Image (cartoon, rainbow, N blue to C red):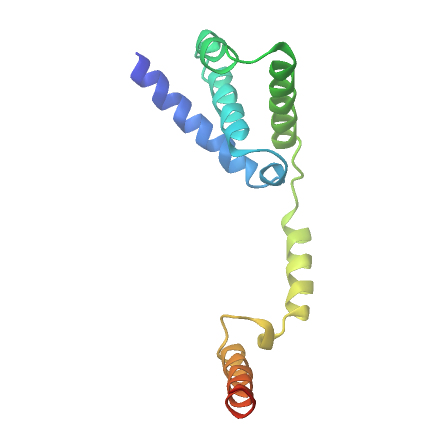
Length: 134
């Protein structure tokens, strides 16, 4: 039964982590707290009781203030995922079209033009160094 619970938690937790990719939580919170939030979210969704484990292994070594800080962080992460903005396909298409207008092949490191330009710049520096440095 524990193995089945772990598999259910893993799948639901991965879904939560996928959803976090559409938010800015990775810029705001440490990965360990995001993972803990995913685990707690998954346990609620899968109705798997892990409260005793969390209290013993996670909160057990924390002081009251630290525990409150962790709980607040979990709440903030969960809210960010729950309240993420869903964009309509038409809105995304408009943004992509605007970005395409801004695109400059000379600034794209994947393009041959960019590589050629960078090579020419490197050659200029190398030639200068060969002429002017001992």
